Image 1 (cartoon, one colour):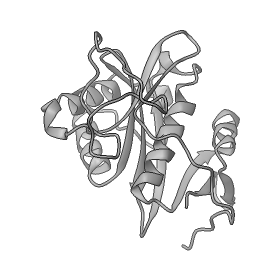
Image 2 (cartoon, rainbow, N blue to C red):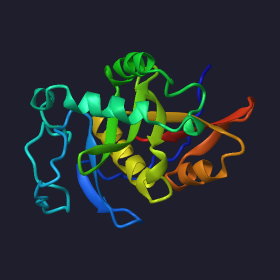
Image 3 (cartoon, rainbow, N blue to C red):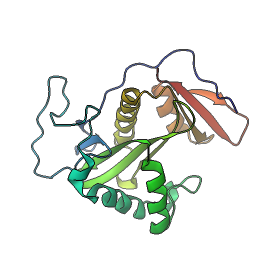
Length: 207
């Protein structure tokens, strides 16, 4: 199926890493996957554009070998504790073995951004390759961190990271009844592209 994308190119989105204070007063760090796990005692130094100053590969990532797999295990822990009510389309999987297999697939060649509160991973947004320069978007925030503005910042960082990686088109599916999610996606420029199924398909042209 040939997907339809908006004619207008989206705005420039902020690139991670960056930090913000959520609606409940918690300091949240948005970082690309492959970065070191934040230390609770870490001093956040700001660059000239307000981002954290750090050594990286030019895409906001720390060398993956620095974390020794801790980052992956922390992400697994987040999904193991995920509220079953927040699962959609069988994602994330319910069992730990399924979560590990799913994450290995998603993180292999994808474009991923994580939300951290101190040493806890509390959110994950991903662009999964789906054809030449096309990506499917999915976003997850743990229940106790929802409705605090974290989803919006994850989207901002993910789309900015996608622009850095050269992603051209992004699409997603959302349940028709999920007005909150649809409002969030429209705020970032997504437009409805397919209404033929039970779920709506929305798309965005990044560049």
